[in-house]
Amino acid sequence: MIKFLDLQKVNAQYAEELKKVAAEVIDSGWYLLGDHVKQFESGLVSFQEGGNAVAVANGLDALRLIFKAYIELGVMKPGDEIIVPANTYIASILAITDNQLTPVLVEPDFDTYNLDLNLIESKITSKTKAIMVVHLYGSVCWNQELEILAGKHSLKLIEDNAQAIGARWNGIRTGNLGDAAGFSFYPGKNLGALGDSGAVTTKDAELAKVVRTLANYGSAQKYVNQYQGLNSRMDEMQAAFLNVKLRYLDQETLQRQKIGAYYLENIKNSRIILPKADVVAEHVWHLFVIRSNNRKELQDYLSENGVQTLIHYPTPPHLQECYVDFNNFSLPITEQMHNEVLSLPISPVMSKKEVEKVVEILNNYSSGTV
Ligand SMILES: *Cc1c(COP(=O)(O)O)cnc(C)c1O
Image (tube, rainbow, N blue to C red; front, side, top):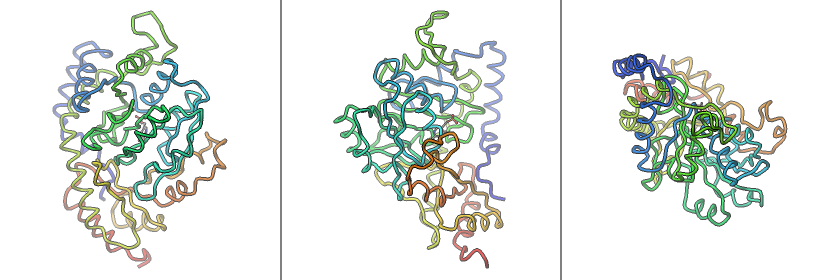
C-alpha cells in the first residue's frame, strides 16, 4: 500500500533529535513562554526573510487572532466584510465568523484551484475591510493587480499560509506578501509539529504586539489585562520539535517539488485533469490535487491497486450544517471542484519507486471497469 502520507516515516527521520529536545524540555521544568518558543519565532522570521512572528496554539487561532487584533486596533468592526475563497478549508471561514465578521465567498479559478482574482473587484462594498487569500494546496494566490486593488480600496491583505510555508512569489515568501498571515503546524502540514501549533507573521510590529497580547489572555504584563483575550500559546515542547524540523524544511520542500514535477510531466491520461503550476510562483506541493468527473470510480481503482488517496475537501464550507445561512448560495465552480478533486500521495519520504508506481497505475486507468 502506498500511503497518502506516512507521518511516522516523516518523523522517524529526525527521531533522535526530537527525543533529545523533548528530554531537554522535560528536564528544564519550563513549559510555556520560554526560550524554545523565542528561538522558533526568530527562526521563522529568518526563514521568512523578515517581519515579525508570534507563535500560537494552532492555525485556526492564528487567523482568528489576526482579525481579533484588527478589531482591537479599530481597523475592523463586527459586521464588516472579508473576501475569501469559497473552496477553502473551513478554518479560514471560521476565523472570520468567529469574530462576527461576514465572509464574502468568492469562486476559485478552475486551473489554479485558488481564488479567482478577477472576480474580487465586483464583490467590494463599503463594508469590505480585507481580502483573505488562501495559498491552497501549496500554490501561491497572488498578483500585482491584487496589491493595487487592495491599495485603491484601503483593504488589508491577509494570507492563509497554512498550506504554503516556503513558497515564493517574485522571490518573496508567502506569509510576507500581505499585511498579516496565519500559519499552521498541524502534523500533516509541510512543517508539521507533533501536535497542534501555529503562528502569525506580519510586517506590522504593532499588530504583532496586539496578537501576542491577545494570545496570552489579553495580557502583556502578568495580571494586567488590556483585552478580552484567548489562551492560544505555542508550548515549549512543540516549539522545540519545530526548531528541529524547520532546519529540514527547504530540503523536504525540494523533495515535494521533485515529485510534483514528476507527476506533472508523466501522468498522461485524458480522463485525469492535472493541476496547473504557475511559473511565476513557487509551488510547495502540500497536496497534489487532480480532478476527475468520475472521482469515486478513480479513487476505488487507485485503492484496489494499492494507492491511498484523500479528498480535500468533500463538502464546501457553504454547504456545511454550521453555515445553514449559506446553504443556498450559488457557487457552482466550488461545488463542481468539491465533487471532482482527489489528492494523490505526495510527501518527502515517498520513494522514487512509489512515485513511479502511482504514475503507472494512473496511466493504466481506462474505464475502471476493466
Ligand atoms: C490546516 C489549515 C488551517 C487550520 O490550521 P490548524 O492548525 O489545523 O488549526 C487553516 N487554513 C487552512 C487552509 C488549512 O489547511
